[in-house]
Every structure is written in C-alpha cells, then in structure tokens.
Amino acid sequence: MSAAHHRSDARSPAAAGRAGRPALSALSGKAWAREAVRLIEAEGRRTADTHLIALPAPIFPGIDIYMKDESVHPTGSLKHRLARSLILYGICSGAIGKDTVLVEASSGSTAVSEAYYARLLGLSFYAVLPRNTSRSKIEAILQHGGRCHFVDEPSAIYEEAGRFAAENNGYYLDQFTYAERVTDWRGNNNIAESIFEQMSLEHHREPRWIVMAPGTGGTSATIGRYIVYRGFATRLCVADPEHSAFFAGWRDADAGAACPRASRIEGVGRPRVERSFIPGVVDAMVKVPDAASVAACRVLSRLLCRRVGGSTGTNFVGALWAGARMRAAGEEGSVVTLICDSGDRYADTYFNDAWLAAQGIDIAPHAAMIERALETGEVPAKLFLDEGFRTQPHTA
Image (cartoon, rainbow, N blue to C red; front, side):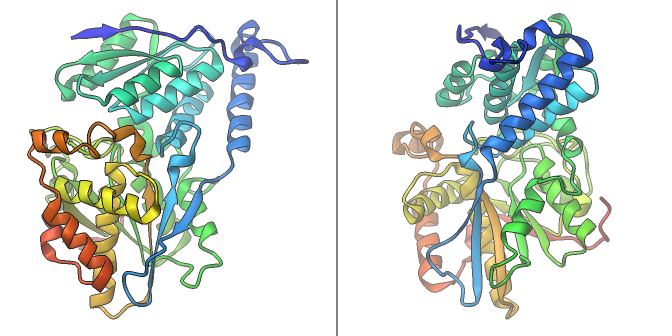
C-alpha cells in the first residue's frame, strides 16, 4: 500500500467566514454543528433539483423512457446526494466536529463529493481508493482539497479505511454500511420523491419500472422503500454489472455471496453484497455484461449529444430490458432510470478503444444489438447474462 497526499491551499469561503457571520473555524461544539448544517442546507438550496430527460427517440410504442440527470450536481454525479447525507448524519450524530478528519472507502465518485463537502466545512478528507481508480476521479478528489490513500486490492478498502481513520483521529463515513439509512426514504426531497414529482404531469405519470444499477445499494433501497411507503404499483429493477455479487446474493438469498473480480464499470458492482443493499424491495434483477454497458453508454452518448458514463450504460440496458418486458406483456407506460455521471471522466477508458482492447471488451456486437433495438424495439436476450424476479413479499 502507498499513499499520495495533496491538499489545495484554497480555503473554503464558508470556513473562512462571510460578511456578518463568524468563521466556522471559530466555533465549536453545538454552535459549530448548527453552522455546518446550515452551510450544507444552503448549498442544497442553491443547487436545486436535477433534470428529468425524456429520451428523444421512441423505442417501444406506447412506452416512454426517462433519465434523471444526476451528472449536473456540483461534483458531477449521483454520489453528491449520498455525500451530503453521510456528512449530515455524522454531524447530527455528534461524530463529526470542527477537527474531525473524514475518511472514506470509495471507487471514486463518492470521494469526489465528500471532498467537496469537507472543503466547504474546512475539514480534512482522505479517500481510500483502489489503485486502478480512473485518473480523472483522483484529480477531482485532489482539486476539491482531498487526499488519496491507495490500496492494491480493491476488496481491502473497507478494512484499510477503518484502520486509517482509527490511527488519524478520523471518522470513517462508511458509505457501504450507512447509505441505506442516512437518507430519509419517506421523502424530504430524496431522489425517489423527486422522480415521482417530476413525472406528475407526464402522460404516464406513475412509472411501470424504475431501473437502478447498485453501487452501495443505497439508492435502490431509497427508491424501493419509497415505492412501498407511497403505495405505488411501480416495480424496481436492479441492473447489476458483470463482475458483481449483488445478483447472486439476491437470487440465492445469500448475503455472503462474493465475486472474485472487481467490477470494470466504475461506481456500480461490488465484490460482496453491501449492507446497504435491501433485497426485499427489489422486484427484478438483470445481469448486464460489461460489453453491453460500455456499448450502451456510447450509443446513449450519441443519442443525447453528450457523453455519459459506464454505469449509465448499465442503467440504459436495464431500461431496455424493462421496456421489452412491458412490450411483450402488451403494457403501455413509462420507465425511469438515471444518468449517474458524465462520460467525460472516462475518456481514457470507456471511450478509448485501446483500453477496451486491453481489457478484452468487444463492444461491437452489443452496440449493433442496441442500435437495432432503437430502430425496431426488438431487444435480444443476448444483451443480458441473466435475469430474475422476486417471488416473496416486500420486506423493507
């Protein structure tokens, strides 16, 4: 293991204080916590909600596909919401104070967002990352004032983050454990409530399916619980990338399921079933080959006239699966999924043919299948590795 350390010299305006307000660094105890919460809440008000985009090309007759664009957050990804919730949770629980060092185990995007919030509050932040994390994400962490600590084995990030926090008077944010509980799944402008509010004036306002690829499992937990809580008939499909343990864990009801290879789709897929994944709220799962995820992110990038990341490709393949199921059943309605982050972060990977060749990923057959699906509405079974359906009642 080795660590790379860099921190921006730029001070947070909030930490330094604004006209008429004391510097956050001058406060302590409950006064510091109150001001820290106010700063985070004010940032949330300024950034407002993310857009819900209707795909410009109709794929299935009578079926509309929407994508909620989480890439427009200040830190460029869905994980901005999670970072905000994790840090608020720590502050309000008394675990984060003015001198706390924040530590996280991450594959990149969550750490970028946590570095942003740490800087807002004038706190030190360390990300424990796999060494193969994309260079653009590492640079983004550093640009937001964070520091990086690398491990050679991706599965070692959990233990190393806990150790590092304990040895440095730190607080381990632990997204993989706490993602499902730090967000108020009943509402309070969570992503599920936002989706249903934004859909309220659409032709098919209650989605037949919402599709989400799992990283921590927290977003699918929030969406699934909210669906049950509000009594919607919407079904939740979780689209799992090729090298990930979630599908097997859900299918076999095995919380100990493991995958020996790290996911090549950054931000989604895990070698183990994370504790924030709530299987009982999931109605169906589909296993998506990496070649299909990458092909889909490229095809979708062309369709949207801007690049989207690989996890968005996984989501899009899942949305095609849901649309095909609806078409086969003679259903009309809507399908909603997410744009998780921008593809600009992956210029050296998913949009680099040499990188794909080195990984042994041939996207041409899957790209052809997806293009044909866009033209004809026919989605071949070869686009998926496996699928499964819930047979037990919801147990959120």
